[in-house]
Image (cartoon, rainbow, N blue to C red; front, side):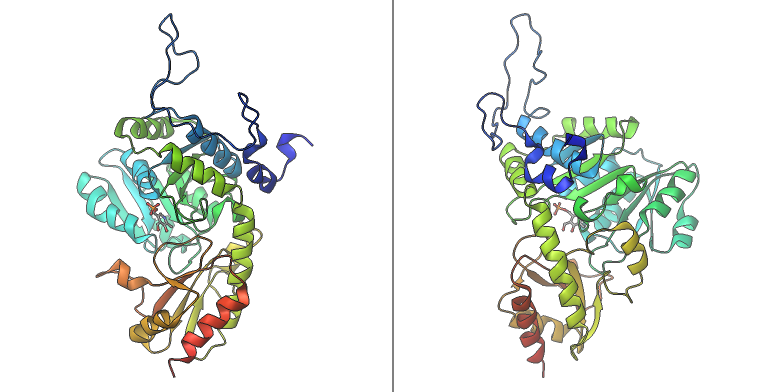
Length: 382
Ligand SMILES: Cc1ncc(COP(=O)(O)O)c(C=O)c1O
């Protein structure tokens, strides 16, 4: 079978399938060098000179993620926020961007507290509503449309292909935060997006022991060139040890995501029957407003993230999280261990997240254990 015909799960499991040419090692080596030897005639024919730009371990992880997303280039960053903010910093003051009302709160906060004062005009809209998105885009002035799908923490869905069509018709690019979907479930570039961003801290690494971010581009171009030099010049790079751990995590990505999706689907269906659950937010449920679009643009599952709204409001939600024994009370998502979080508490004042919402990151534990633990915690609400 040709390399191009291999399923992405095969490509990921073998980390592109190359043995180290120097030693034959099947496990990729960790290159820690920050500096590289010059040739006697003063050239750098092997292509690497200094660690801020060049590291083979980082490049290996980038090549694998780039292949999984079907992109022409991939860059790893020190965090998801470093990756995302580099995209906006590659724009110019005066440029207009459209971003979602419901999105990772840290980036929404950065857009309003840093990007706006810096001179980028930011409009936040419900990007799931294509009429609202269309109305917010200003042909000629809008340079970037940013979407996140499924969007943290309501798991609202945006139609990637339709958003790409609207952005491109107005001369703008489309960037997608694909953290929750991962390339296992959707490939935004194939649907017309220009950039995909990941908090690799989450599913891509999958073991809650690396903070990392990634950008993958559909093609080389001006924006990608600016992003590449911004990473180099500002230095928001990923260290080689983190890249090595990320590469190791990526090898089990498909197994972990498939397991999390199956468990999340089961939990969503069962939790909606519990009398103390007012609502389950999960795109895999038929009555989720984004279900039809999600079914079209995601394959193999609807993700490992869901949220529940608890009868009795904030106090009841916090009490439920207090009484779980298997679900760990912690922020973040996408690790092998299941996490439960009262989301409004971490987002603080001004959050649009309802106070009764608990965010659930489904890990790879035995699904009936996860269900039983939540049910006993909800039952204690009386
Ligand atoms: C959807 C999403 N995007 C971006 C980020 C930011 O990533 P990082 O924490 O790696 O900087 C997060 C972090 O929680 C996230 O959940």
